[in-house]
Length: 448
Image (cartoon, rainbow, N blue to C red; front, side, top):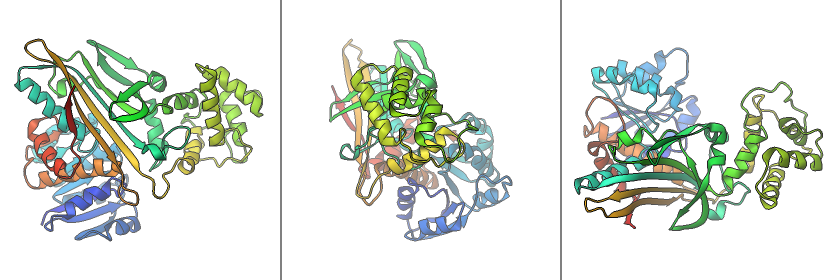
């Protein structure tokens, strides 16, 4: 019976485990830092055993022993731990699947993974993951017909469903917001009209542009995501002069976050002056450099720092800050000694999904194609997936299900080439995409 070790029991782990549990031959061990968490996760699953394991422990012996006892390990812990997991898998000759981008640390392990004879398959989630499956399909089909992909655009967003986007940011968190907020400070690069463009992390929110999806009537904005430039090589489209990968949010989100960034609320360094007992308005005063903490003074200082483009935008964002409590006399509860973590504690309460609410995944790829006769057309692939109230979120399904599919294909020997891989080839993408379509998570293709 194939033995699978699942590291982590977060939101996306459920659909992954449930997919693998459909095969009665599979046995699953679920490892968490606490046995209680692992046991609760395993309770509804057949052939599932809980295990207490800390992948971040200084001594890797327990991780190495657990990995070596299984045929495949699925790493759904933070990406910073993936290299340690793969190192353990190389020792134990155990296959690995992750949903994360291939980091430089993982690329460095490719040779050792090939020598050990193990498959290390990454980017088997949503973005990265499902996007690759359809990009490769469309690009290969265009090339087979003698065409060229001159432009490639990908935009993906995890959002609350429109009826649930009922706060000033138009956003909600189903997990700790810290990682999501820090991602807004990542620099990004893309290829535009043949030239590489760079966006500094501090300018990422300000770089957001309106973005329209014909099938979705609500106002959206897009900003670049990570480094898109290597994907010209990954997708084998040397003819492309534009390669963009971006993130979608409701249009009111980026200007609000840009204002919080300018005011210092996303600072992750410890502030000695940030102590319990201060009022929120006093913290806002210190963060933005106002001379007093009254409403009028704070408003004037925020307008000065943020330089809003219009009075209506100023009122919208400052009213949103009042909703967040940043002008209130309520005492703060400091977390981690930082403005970022203290704000995150607030947002975890204010911006959590409520019972009966649902999330939304929007993903669209656009290919501008030039055919051999000079004719141009645009091909799009689109996914609009809603979560199930009381069930799995759209995010959980669109990450967890492809991860489960990829894991099963490794176990079945469909993917058997040793080394560190991502779904950039027909050989990997086609089998995953075929099974994903059966799960109702396929993308809709259109020619414009």
